[in-house]
Image (cartoon, rainbow, N blue to C red):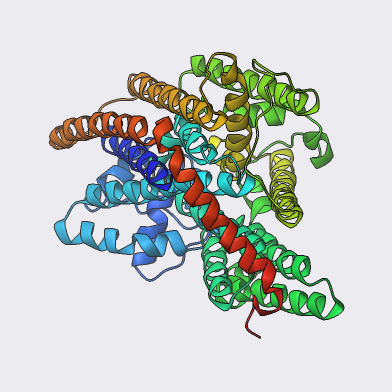
Length: 513
């Protein structure tokens, strides 16, 4: 299943790369500011939200053209409230553009860099879905395909944003934390997870929430295996060390924001800069269904994406709600046949079931903190974009996958429930891919072609590669999701069982003191 996930990530990258080449430079909102951040940083200056965007028509003709006619606040690098890691990663692309005398190379390179981050995020959504639903082995593939079917994901992946890598780093931090909950805390796992957390906090401020949840993961992992006061103290110390790591590495930047703007994210200063109007209070937004519907719908219809794709959002939401209701009813009152029949899952010990609950609770904790921050941001005058829905995608995709597996039983039958899952996963994944390709072609009609005719060959090549990758991914899904492949389940189950048994058998040795 991991190979299928990787293929979906490759297809996501190909689709975003096609957008990156096909869209005129700096078409999407904030692109010029993100590009300017890297350019100014390459000159040895860490910009502020009031630093002017470079507008030299000779060196940066695209920026000069994009800034024409804008008022003063919108000519500034207002995204300078973000930590600098993405822009540090972009420095070689700026230097390459300077070396060849073409800022277009820099802009395209930064788009492709973000596309890679979004592609990794698609893969990591599937891996997180596996942690949330570990006993349904097709869920990761379904989750990855569902994310690919959200038109805004690959579209935003083709722009100059720091969200791709910020999301991927946060997902990786959560994934490594959940793995420690399941398999125990070791020094190597702790080091890798903390490194991912530091990177997440160095991309975007939301990465700090992932670091907080990582500390809770470590504490829960130790406590579940040895619920003693000594374990609690050790867990608190380790969680504190995890939280201290971003403070040491990137804390200076957030302290700088506080000194310059009065808060770590400069939200109030940005709202004042652009004279944003408030949208009620945080509590009002938290209980406002429009916030959640807008956030969910933006995954399919955001920015210039045709509003007709709201239909896809409504259909997906309807299937998800219906499937989850049927699934809950089937567990309470199963039938012998039909959509309500019982699905026998691989066996799990009581301890493993408790770990599943803990992982889901920690994921819920992450989502609650993010939505509270988002509600506060929206209440203060911030706008809602599809990029802000990315933290919730693992949960959305996992729930949709479970719902599809339940609803699909209305039409799909086979000798075993595992074979039914495989067939539903194949049909649904191909459906999501087809939807993604149709949306992609539709969105292309809403944006202009490349501003520079020299990119025409690259655009045609990107189209060919994207379609070829899509065809190859579908063929591989057909091969890997055949019922005959279900023999792999036994080997996978034995492997998972051995790891779980080792984690349970030696709780006191799970972390080297």
